[in-house]
Image 1: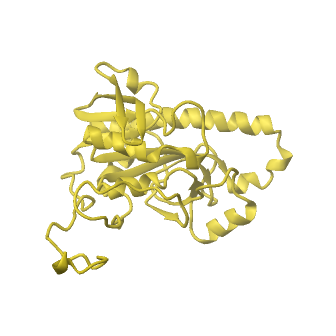
Image 2 (image 1 turned 180 degrees about the horizontal axis):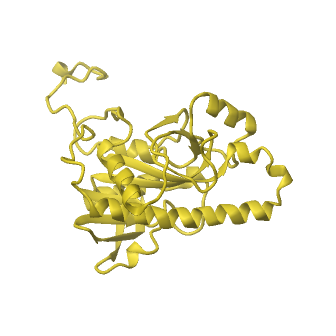
Image 3 (image 1 turned 120 degrees about the vertical axis):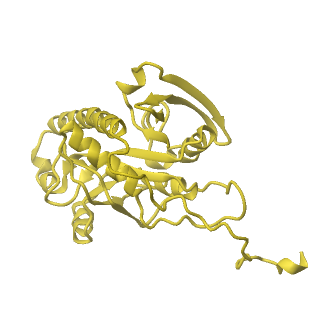
Length: 276
């Protein structure tokens, strides 16, 4: 396993043997990767999805980030997220390890195939069961409460949070959390046949936000900032504890990276192959 972790890991990147890595990709430079060994696993921390100041979700350099992982030989990725809680069980500050996602719209982001022809990523199951077990076990070892399942609803491409009507619809559809940044990161990672899993912290709850207009915005923002800081610290603890106990659940087998290896006729060719 060569693990990529998308996380501002303030503590772990200062560990012994962790070094900063700078890469130039076809989509631009990526200079915020910190690489080293964490409990016997080669680990590469991508310090945030975007360089510099916060940007809208559609300006995040997803292709550059994944190309950097290409260059490093990363085959497993854990994405960390700041989200909103949708169902009644999730409150601000809660951690969730989603088991699936809904993404009905997104950017025109894709990576060229490393070899052969383009094909759509196979994404069933969506998240790697091995990485999910690592995160769940890490939370148990660290003594941190998490929701061990949930559907992430991707609300990509809007410079606002969700309306109450949208949140009500998401809840009716069975979503537990909502955010703007999991896809296309998820799709691009699966295009590369990478094992992918996620963990998220909720900074607010749909059921709490119904009365948000009665709350001082500064109080709400302060509460959100604290939830983010606490969440990132807990992410580090969970990932470190999970890596420290790798193998505790038996063989790390899954079908995430399986691809058809035979030579097959292109059913979508624009010209008869035998006449080329």
